[in-house]
Image (tube, rainbow, N blue to C red; front, side, top):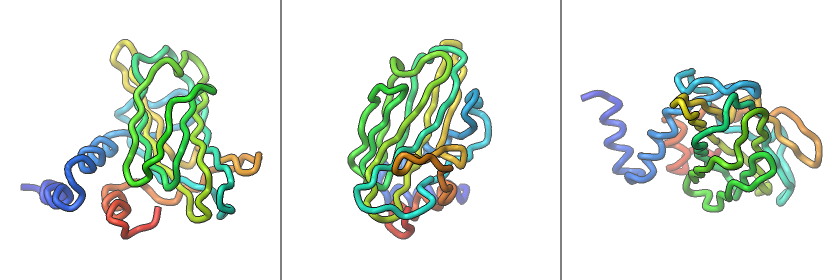
Length: 187
């Protein structure tokens, strides 16, 4: 048996099966830039991102990223975890809300995504601390091609109407996931 198997067996006992299933699913997705999305086989750069400076409690943070799709997708799936409740919109249309910050949220949709340029917005209110989030989006085309977008250093964050590059807080590795979920590492 491999070390990975033993770790996953231990993590299942500590974290519980539903969270472990999410962690394994999150591990299989990746990231890229705002033009064309990379194929799902590209290396992952999934990272926790936040604002470069601390914000006052209840200040609005908007994480944004534009990307281009060659075709209208068959399905879009977003997996999101954030340190504060978060609203997700794509091209100005609501996708959903993530309100239970103790658990990741999965959104599945397609009508909001269009062929051409798309703009994804993740809006949250500052908790007055280290506000952060991590997100992985998978886009499946009619021909079965799967592309992805993840939170990384290419995102921007809008604070008080001013856009700035999002700060990469740390990579989203299996170690960090387990430590964060156990409450040992702040997001």
